[in-house]
Image (cartoon, rainbow, N blue to C red):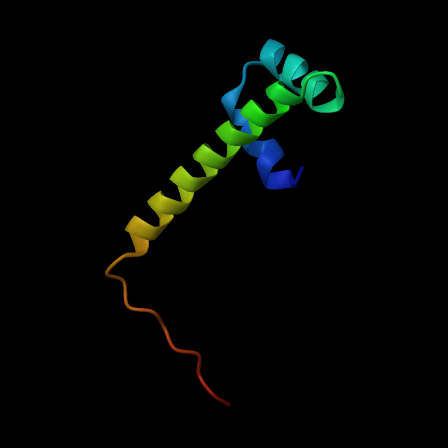
Length: 67
């Protein structure tokens, strides 16, 4: 799991739920919990990507200057 995904997970959960979630990520007996956490992280990340895209929509892109 990458750093960005862990940061998103941290934002989503309270401290008690963080401990439980991190335990679930490590525990091989709980694959459904890991899948649900991964789904929530992906949804949250997609939402951020959509926000960033809407903020930059209409903003002309700069072209790189050639030396």
